[in-house]
Length: 125
Image (tube, rainbow, N blue to C red; front, side, top):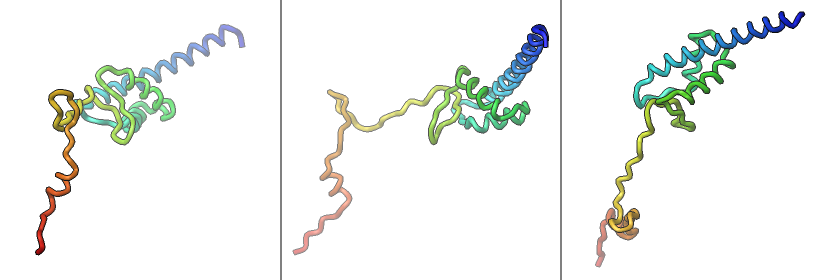
């Protein structure tokens, strides 16, 4: 093989790889745009749908979808039991417990008040 033939083969491989990347990115983009505000999709579901649309092997699609989703604006990826791909910002937690007006600490109920509030005291004479 000559050096020119090697370059042509490398260019063909790069063109093939770029075509795969473009197919996966376009399919991922269309799937992400279908997600509504506050809705959750798992990464596995998105990867499975991309594989079904593009026909790219799952081993290649999983990494490309992961990269694309993490860098796509307006979406966040969370890990864990309630993790997945979410559209929009994270909802703020609202703490409704009573707080001290001066220092802001949470006011705790006394232990005795909690124990006696649910029981009836009966005097047996």
